[in-house]
Amino acid sequence: MILAVFAVWAMVPSLMAMVMPQLVARVALGHILAPASVALALQLAGARLGLGLVALTAARVPRPPTMLVLAVVLGLGATLAGFGISSGAGWLTAPERLPYELWLKLDATIALSLAATMAWRGFGRKKTA
Image (cartoon, rainbow, N blue to C red; front, side, top):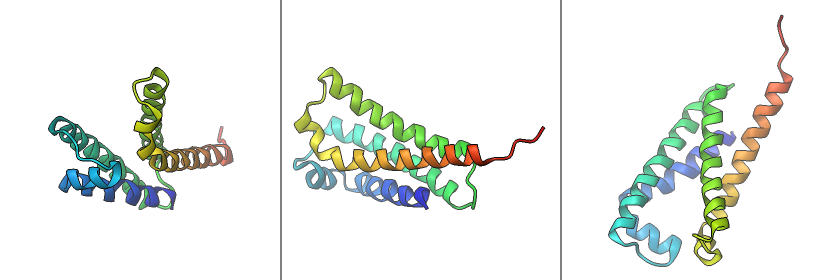
């Protein structure tokens, strides 16, 4: 269920950003983007769409393969780490990060939920000799 929710959470805005990047930027950020920023945003939207497709693939089976779930957790973790490093280094100020706070909190919640589920399932397995 968590994977399916993330798949929708990742894929719908990504598709919208790929089709209408300036409109999505205006709604999400309050301003339009420079052409170079649009190109970068399109690449990132494609990557997030790919991560959503991995989550959707994993969500379609009763017990998703650990590697697919781990790929989603690592992808979300990399996003969170990137924002953390940029904020810590002063490259991204609090006002610039503010439009992304809700996204980051939800991404962190999903990543932690998936990691906890993986850990719980890993500890619950019976070991065979």
